[in-house]
Length: 484
Image (cartoon, rainbow, N blue to C red; front, side, top):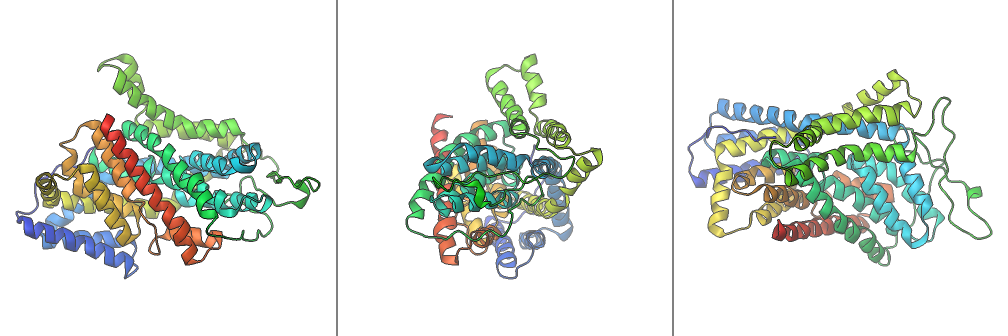
């Protein structure tokens, strides 16, 4: 994935470029946070303001924006679409529910929060955050009802597992955008992201969940009938006769009767399908680090580990392990895959418009101004990327907008860094984009409503958890930077 290289579209001075960047970002922030515009339109208007204030002609601004938009769709859009298709098959077949069922029923007591964090991280690899929440919340509520562990001790680890993967690990949109804009190596970013994800999930999940549950008491919302995932896969039902009335032991999650001709694809098949693309991309990174150029084994893994190839192979595998094994015929499998695309149209448009905004920043020369200022002030590139992402995240509430804008601003710095450091810069930006989710973030309201919390309780739990993820994730990035 390469960032477009283009001649400057303006010869404005440093002061004018800084003013243009600030005004462009302010326009985006105000239109999203105050006027409640869709981020896609806000980014278009922000790009226009940026180009015109910088002194670029309208035609040059439009050309720069459309070039960035097209490049981003070509680099990132295909990966998002393939990931969404795998996620849809995982949800529709009941594979995601099967993973949850197996792991949660295998542990009890104090181990449950850790199990929820693990299962959330696992199914969060191919699923968007919102889909993961909808799949997991019914399970969280049911487990919380059947045990005395408490809602937050189970719910916070599940949310942490999903959020960490969403912000730090490709093929989620945020990390992919940062990788594309910075021309980072996806395999290395994936490897470092997984390394950082482990301690981050532990601290923000079970550790923080146990601590906050003692201070914020949230009753478990009532379940009405069966709690099912959005895709109508394997349902989990609340049945009093499942629990052992003599011992009071936690009830197991039980399978609802599947429709005629349908069957559960199986735990092993679902896990294998989720992990295959990840393993292929990691294998490519390992091969590039350990084998010499021209080595045939390295060449083999470079092809298989190419993100598009890895995800395509994962999708082809999912069509059999999840679709065929679940009892879908070819038309049903095609319908599931096709049905996964409309819900991500908004995400693709935001990401594409963000790529256009980034390209106007780059072509106007704003990134070079920031890079020069950072060199003069001796600001670490990782710290700069993190702080810029934090600022945009707090202002807009959008992790994707924060990632896009920060990556565009610090992109010129990436050209002066080695490959491992560029990968860490992408992760630093991703960590900053998760900082303190509050009332201008759709995820804030999603969690609030699902868990039946007040705004104050949501800030004390969800918002603080997101901040812990951001800070711990960035701290891990800085530690890794010492060794790579």
